[in-house]
Length: 235
Length: 207
Image (cartoon, rainbow over all chains, first blue to last red; front, top):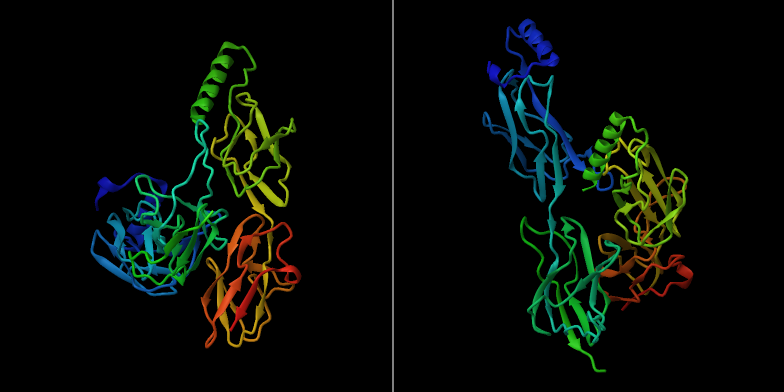
């Protein structure tokens, strides 16, 4: 027993009692927990079946692993650990299209009555954007400080945000020159998107290509083909 | 910073208590730490039933203009709701000496409405979307709504409704087999009464 890891608590004393009587001095502890997702409104973790498979967890202290299939609501490592042993649950392979984080992932067996390491998972999200060309420079009046007199290009993704995203020439980019843009709110895997123009900029008419789709991207591959082309208008 | 105000206040209160002065000067900022979903003016708040104070549009937090005394009781209430919205306050009452300056929260929900459109000459199913909201329009349909209802009695809208003043932009995710459709007047801003079928300007025309 690694007594240096132990903190004197009543629970601990109780467990030592159990250990001595039931297991001849060596209590066993299962490592497991629930699969949870964060509720977007309340921020609380809610038990949620895992939508995708492929997740592998590792106890980095002893090298044990457990594979967790799609639709799992909870998991348990195949073998228990002994009282006083340290554990640290890590994600060795994330599920397809998701990212996971074990909560309260590491401690010493026996410090608490049971070991519970819930795993919080969420869908990967992706930037949706592309190249803007032909966007004119804004115009200002002569007041101090100057006030913008031109309308700016505003793009929306349906009603997913309460206000649209202003797309402006980045500092140092010449009027009309191409630049990269992406919608400020990333889109989760499996979700559809439909980018449209809410407000045209003064002096140009812009159109979007490839603005509609459903996110089926590989991990880490952003969507960069949503291009906006603006053509100068007369008057 | 607010923590410092609070600590200063508490310290001051203690010092005064030790000196036996009794009572203390109001010197603590009463703060609503977080306000979400408020996109319009019209909400007023009171503390302990006092004079209502107005909260501006798009406010994300609010400090009451009148300072409060250490160890006094506070009770924040919404005196006036903003138009076409319902706001709710959490942790709105307590003792100044023991409250956490980040605990008072107001969340607002703007009224939401259905969006309807007409469909012309659709021979096979198609899928339209408003950002992340997808709706399948069946073959031969002459109208659609973005709203999806559950199977309860009476049915309750579960997705697709749009809050007042929020923009919408319809796009075609999947064209019907063998046809090409276009959406006319597919973008705008949700008006105060919603967009009923009788007056909708939105038309999906298929050829």
